[in-house]
Amino acid sequence: MAACDFASREFDDAVRAAGRRAFEETLAAGLSVFYLDDEGLDRPGGLSHIHYNRTTVPGKTFYIETFGCQMNAHDSEKVVGTLLSEGYAQVATPEDAGLVLYNTCSIRDKAEQKVFNRLQNFKREGMKGKIFGVLGCVAQQEGERIFNRAPHVSLVAGSASYTHLGEMLVQLESGNRRVTGLSFDNAEAFDTPFTRRDNPHRAYLTIIEGCDKSCAYCVVPFTRGPERSRTSESVMAEARGLAEKGYTEVQLLGQNVNSYRDPSPAGWDFATLLGRVAEIPGMRRVRYTTSHPRDFVRGIVDAMDANPAICDHIHLPVQSGSSRVLAAMDRLYTREEYMRRIEWIRNAKRRYSLTTDIIVGFPGETDADFQQTLDLLDEIQYDSLFSFKYSPRPNTAALRMEDRVPDEEKQRRLLILQEKQRAIQIRRNAELIGGIQEVLVEGRNQALGQWIGRTTCNRTLNFSHPGTNGNDLAGEYLSVRVTRAGPNSLVGESAAVV
Ligand code: SAM
Ligand code: SF4
Image (tube, rainbow, N blue to C red):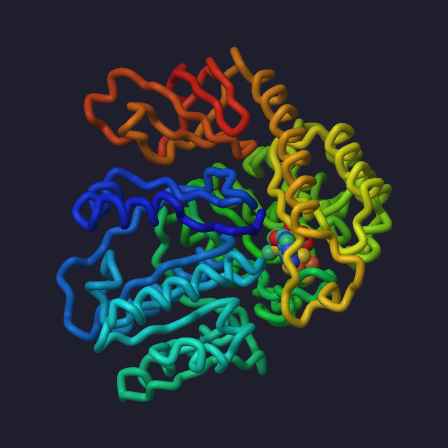
């Protein structure tokens, strides 16, 4: 999915405002993690269930902060698992850590600036004796330039080199203060037995890494390298292992899961893999993200229709409603071809919730092009969307395009788009009032005295459930009657345990 800023604003606020003690209490209670749209529109992302090790060994402690998409969040889970297996202990604040890591996002300039601000803060506070590492997309994009910009950084590594994380740690431990992992050579998928997942009920599972498309605005092919699919055997083994450990929901991840191609002789495509994962005993919910419309074939809808464990939600990023802009973006589909996919979805056996990503202000986008995007919203009636102002990124084709849209105009279009979508969501969510939704309980909002649930169509449903006698409902599936609806979430009361 939206695979966009997966920044934890509550996390930041908790650390700043409440200090470490209150922060740990917040974590113990279950902390909501939010995706941030442009202009900070909150989207519930998931829950953090991190348990920090408080018995720290000096020099063998680490702190990690993650920015960006689910792919980054899951990479961090793998990095954390690898560090734990190497004898490191995770701590809750950078102050307590010997090794401070930032797993970064560079999808838009704003996300990139965040990490440099973090590093700058530490420089000022003079955090001596610590080792700083920049991981992920900014690391890959900026490479060794980071050492000049932030000389207190000792490790710069992109995601394609995490398979060598153990060796990089050895170099750091032996005193090397310029360790890099930036090569895409022989890049394999980062498939590790050490993943330490943050959530005990919902698991991310990488099926494909990198991207072979070349959308004119996008930095991902430069930061995450070429596409590498995992073998179906290793994906299935991991998925079965998750079900055996009690995970009931799995989200298959990749920048473009639709172009999954099993490299083993079995040769499964994405639809086959999706169907097989959903057949694993104990797997109650299977999601996937993110999809490129060009590779979204009818077989995926058929696989979804055939297996009720696959969630009623499809995220299909359109980016623009204008075929002219789509061509300039090199998206490889027209508005009409996109609409054909929507038709397959609308004609399916089940009703699927539909969400998307939209960029406003791409170079050359006229008022008429933008109007076509607004018309598309009217036509499709998305259940939710992530909207972004076009942000020029290094190395990308759009960087050389003329006819830039001024920032004030991008802002104006963004607000119009968000306003329209807000009205659509108010209407669509209101249609659910009075009905029953099954939710997976994700945690409790102590302040509101409500449980937080997620529906199969990926809506947040906060609900009351009297008589729990202090029991934690997290991880349970409950039937909830919807009583109220806002633009971004629903409110309800539990009906009965399913
Ligand atoms: N692979 C997905 C696809 O093909 O749609 C997109 C993944 S990308 C990490 C997530 C979203 O970020 C994109 O769908 C796009 O809307 C947004 N995005 C990417 N590059 C951007 C840029 N330069 N400026 C603004 N938004 C951008
Ligand atoms: Fe970026 Fe396009 Fe690849 Fe998506 S498909 S990650 S937008 S290059």
